[in-house]
Image 1 (cartoon, rainbow, N blue to C red):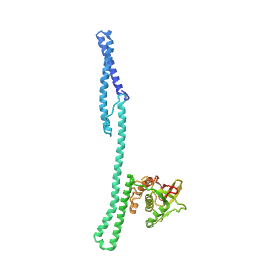
Image 2: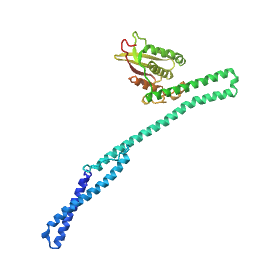
Image 3: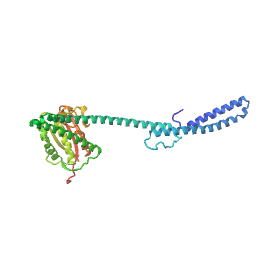
Image 4: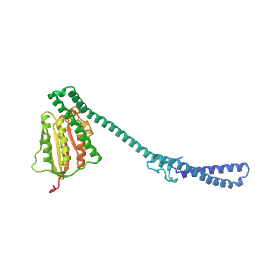
Length: 350
C-alpha cells in the first residue's frame, strides 16, 4: 500500500476488496448449486458487505490512529494540552505525524547539542576561573606563611612580602571586576550613557595613566596628534575601558623598545580608532579565538603580566553596545592592530 494514501482511502480499498471477494464467493456457491440465474444476489451481497466493511474498517482505523497519534503528540508537545488535537482522516495523518516527529527530533538534537556546548563552556569557565584565582591565592598564602614563620620581624622582608601580597590581591580584584563587567554586559544590565567626547583627549588621558606601566615594559605609547578635534558620541567610561584594555594588551605583548600608536581617521559619519603595536603578533589560528573568555595567545607571558584573559571579550561587547564592530589585523612577529568605529557627535551637541 502507498504511504501517501489517507485512512479513508485504505478503508475504502479494503472494503472494495472484501465486497469483490464476497461477490465471487456467492457466485461460486450459486454455480455449485446450479442457481446462476440468481447472480444478482452476488452483486447485492458484495455491495452490502463492502459498505458494512467500510464502516467497520474506517471506524476501527479512526479509533486506532486517533488514540495512537494523540499519545504521540502528547509525548512530543511541550505545551500542556498539546495532545488535544482533531485528526483529519482526509489527510495522510501518518505522514504528517512523521514530519512533525522529524521536526521535533531535529529540535531535540539541536537542544542536546546546545546543552552539550553550554556544559562544556561551563566546565571550561569554572576550570579557567579556578586556575586564575588559584595562582594569586597560593602566592598570598605563601607570603603570609613566610611572615608568620618569622619574616614579620624583619622590616625589609615584611614590606617586600606585603607589597607582593598586595599585587596579587590587586590581580584578584581586577579579575573579579572584569567578571562583574562581562556578567552585566551579557545580561543586558550595562548602561551606556552617551555624551560628546573628544576621543583624542580621552586617549591621551588613558595613555598617561598607563605611562608608568609602559616604561616598566620599555614600550612607548604615542597618541597621534590631530589639528582638529574628533568628537564622538560615546560613554567615556566604557570607551576609556576599551582603550585601556587595548593599550594594556599592547604593553603586555610588546617587544623591547617597542611602540604602540593610537591613530584616528575621519570616515564621514564615524571616526575610526586604531591601536597599533609592533609586538609579537598573533597566529592566524588564534585570531578566531582571541575574544573567548580566558583565552590567551601567550599564556605564560600574559599571566606573568597579570592579565585576566577577559579584556578583549569586554572590549568587543562594549564596542558592539555602541553600534560598532571590533576588527583585528595581525602578523606574527610584526605586530597587531585593533580598530573600531564610533559615531561622530552632532555639531553643537555637548
